[in-house]
Image (cartoon, rainbow, N blue to C red; front, side, top):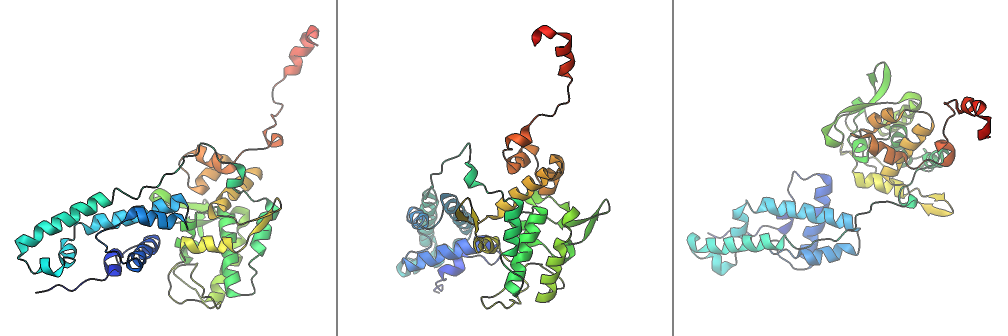
Length: 335
């Protein structure tokens, strides 16, 4: 009895994949089919080179890591390898087919060792690699999408929420309507159900509670009463009624759509730049570093200090808290 050939897309893309994995595996499966390659003979060196012309080295590493992870799962599904045997081998008795399958899996294991990406670890990063918006630049960014369209209103709410709370892009995507209004020692706060490291936390809005007016306007206009706050809007500006949250890639595209002129050059902020902006501007406004650390969900204060960034000379100017003048008055010869 012959086994039907299973399409590459069905093999490489599991139904339970998250959005990022789904995108990476779908891209890889499409490349396999377009280049007439079979799934059980991966050429990760060629795929790496194919991606490097389009993505950064770190992104390529992420793609290859996802692909390797899927292959490791497939190795436990031997029926897929039996189904991929050529007709002349599939016609043999089972005990004669098995060595072929064992060889296919062994070759696959060896192929997964290829496709490495060389990256350079940076001890220091230049200022231009990390963007911290000034207050005026942040206010300009908030106004750029406009609120006259559904898409503009959603994007305004996305940018405003990130600047007001400093949350991560994935945390923003995961926000639900019920997360918006909680209390922490009486303070109105945003609930982050599961941050990095599976940590739950509350982020007080403080004086930025008016951001809720923008988010409420988006929800009311989009007709969202429960579930995920930030959902898709189609290319014509209408709401996509899937009820699914936006992806981190969508958040990145939103910010890329609204570049700012900074130091005479157009630059688009990245999601993490808004976290850095939150950290620095809250620090400048007098919020304690430990409070910023807790709001950002950092484990170590050193990480938070990195987000705040290098302070200028005026901010680093020592305060006159010691009475050195008394010593000088007692020792005129020092003058």
